[in-house]
Amino acid sequence: MSTREQNERIELLQGTLDLLILRTLQRGPLHGHAIAKAIEFRSDEVLQVEQGSLYPALHRLIRRRWISAEDGTSENNRRAKFYALTAKGRRQLTVEAGKWDKLARAIAQILSPGEQEEV
Image (cartoon, rainbow, N blue to C red; front, side):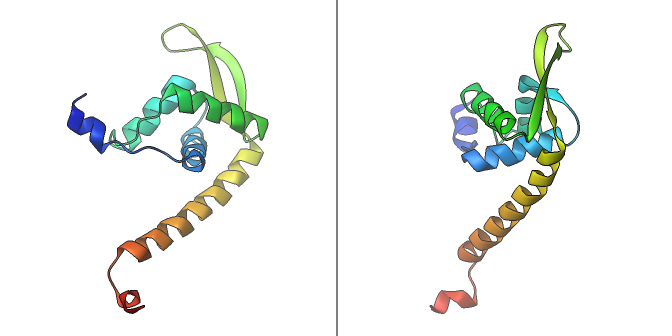
């Protein structure tokens, strides 16, 4: 990866990573590496999730009972832990997505020039 590509990547806030994991698992169970790759792929490689951030987030989501974990075999025939969204996690995904939408609208209002500039 070039320096330019590295500079274009965006670091994720903890809550944002939780939301991205929940949304990624909405499509079905995945192992950790596949979760990271799915986030990277779906963000056109702008977002990169490092193992040092991913696995603590997965453990946090398990403790909250938003996801579950089950041992299995990866597509490379290796032992892997597969993570799945729980019913509680599905409900939380809706809550977290709503919070994100509200935050994104607020930031967009600040960044967009408009009538509020006169304050």
